[in-house]
Image (cartoon, rainbow, N blue to C red):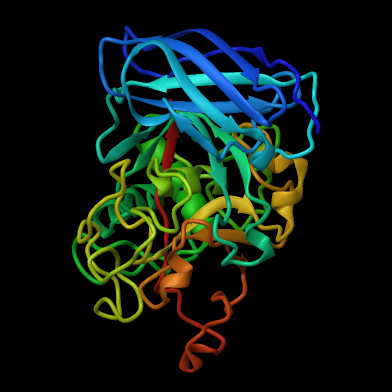
Amino acid sequence: MRILPLLVLAFATLSAQAAPPVVSNVRASQRAGTHTVDIYYNVSSANSPLTVYVAISADGGTTWNVPVFTTQGAVGPGVTPGNDRHIQWNAGTDWPGQFNSQCRLRITADDGTAPPAPSGMAYIPGGAFQMGDPFNEGGTTELPRHAVYISSMFMDKFDVTRELWLDVYTWALANGYQFDNGGSFNGANHPVQTVNWYDAVKWCNARSEKAGLTPCYYTTAAQTTPYRTGQLGLDNACVKWTANGFRLPTEAEWEKAARGGLAGMRYPWGNSLSCTNANYYGCGPNTTTPVNAYTPNGYGLYDMAGNVWQWCWDWYDGNWYGNYQAILDDTRGPASGSYRLLRGGNWSLDANYLRCAYRNDVVLGQRRELPAMRRPQLRRAVVRLDYFGFRCVRGL
């Protein structure tokens, strides 16, 4: 039997208020003759209940991506402050056969408070989450399931609407921006669609500049000229990640936000799906719906499944989840590629595509931009893009 060494411990707190929860006296030990680890900690907070997270590192705290699925006790939502809070972790199930002297343990506590969000945006708390398919329903591109730490951020509550798109688009055209598409719409408060990835990225920059914020995207790694025209194959070095402007979410940011604080679920609201949850094939008007037509997820985000696909920043790699860079904190995807990522499904697709873990890859500049369809009448080269939209994030 492989026995884990005594974990060397670290702790952190997660809150945006002046008096955040304080986690202290964290300790852990492995039960003799078993793979069960008992974790104890103290937590004090003026607010209750708390949400408590466990993250474990195998490299001395550089990354926090050891799988932590089978925990019970004072973990997750509903934890009350106090001393000697107890978590039981089945390390033998989550991390079998491991022996590592560089293990570190991190306990974070969130009291549910948040910094004031910009208008129309929601606060997404930082923390580790399990990315990928928990049910083995989606194929190898969604595996292996892995832990990723994502920093706190703000995200648009809604897909970019007709009104917001036109407001920024009109300003952008008068200030040196050029777009391939002017956007299409099905009515007031519907999401903009028929926009490609390049337009979405340039529009994010225009939204930033219009608001007096620092744009995130630049034409080269020198980051001197904001990206305003053309179709450029930007890479991660072209992004000013610390800028206070708007940008597309990374794939990992999108999935963390889509899950809404839930762990191991298919959809943003849980494991079951009905026509009351989202606009998808057979459960809507066969076109877009207003962006506030359905109930939001746990983070207050609407339409994270259905209505329109949502562009993400990342290049696509079908084997990316097996790459060591996929488990880095705030991972930003591959360095290059031929495809960009879309997430969330749309009004013309069935339930499979609405899963939080589903990944859609798109060849930029080509017209066949829909994955293979289950419905025979839609297995064709698609020339319309009336299901491609996006939403923005901002760093804190």
